[in-house]
Image 1 (cartoon, rainbow, N blue to C red):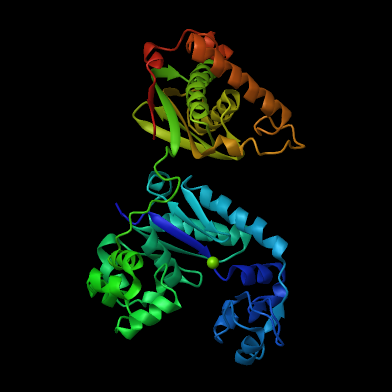
Image 2 (cartoon, protein in one colour; image 1 turned 90 degrees about the horizontal axis):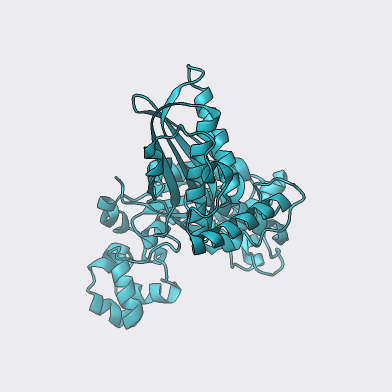
Length: 418
Ligand SMILES: [Mg+2]
């Protein structure tokens, strides 16, 4: 499998792209956000303006001289944050390991997501398409083994592109690139390196670290030397935590009746939701797996508007998904041999408490009043169990099974972090 599992996703010319999104008349035209032909500073330039050499940070008069047809727009700053937040939500749909480093860029670690969404290149393609289709903005993505290289790759991918650097191609990829693309190499460092004849990352890599340290100072020099060899141990914040929580139950061979499905799912949801709450986590995507005789299995999943960790909600969603899968079978009442429930898209539960009460009464939303009631019940159940054991209290189908059709295997739940 590809080791290039760190993604750097970066919206292209973000402020300018938002202006072009909100005002179709600006699309395809060279625009500058901020400044004017008489003065001020350009904050961002569209790619049509960049083609003339216009860049963020440039005085307006100079930009106007470079590009006489340049349109100056004042910038609708209140629109930027909500749009960027929606982009981050899309990124968070493939992994909880999203580390936002500015309004419009983030690192993602997708090592734990490849079994669900495919290779890093496929995941990056999916994200780029979704951001384009659902939000209307172009985003470039770099994928590599390290953060440093992923960030370089996304810069090379611009505009509106994807660059994947496979581990065996790292040196060849970095070799010809200018040192200025490296994170932390500003104009001063670039000029000092150029004085010694070092302009590419390959040249920097071939210069002994001690010599680089003399040029840039010990700390910076040592770091740049390591980065030129793609030595970068920094992890994506949030990576390494559980990315999903699941439980499954083997059933032998059983006819799929309402009672059986509800009893098994209640128990599985109870275990999964209880463990989520114990870890102060909740998740947005619920996935179920139904296995039929002959080892054939069907997976169904649903992404909810908000993260869930309540037992009853998880049970209901899982039940709905399992019946979807069963109804698609040619036999009206097929036999099943296994049920599994997992929750992905995990977030810290502290973020749930920030959700304001909603107008809706959807019990799946933690901010709704039925949702809050479910939450409170689970909290009490957790507290009682912590004192008196897990058998002390529970929802009806779990605590007192109505039908004794569930075989012993059901009691020995195989639980695992997927
Ligand atoms: Mg950007």
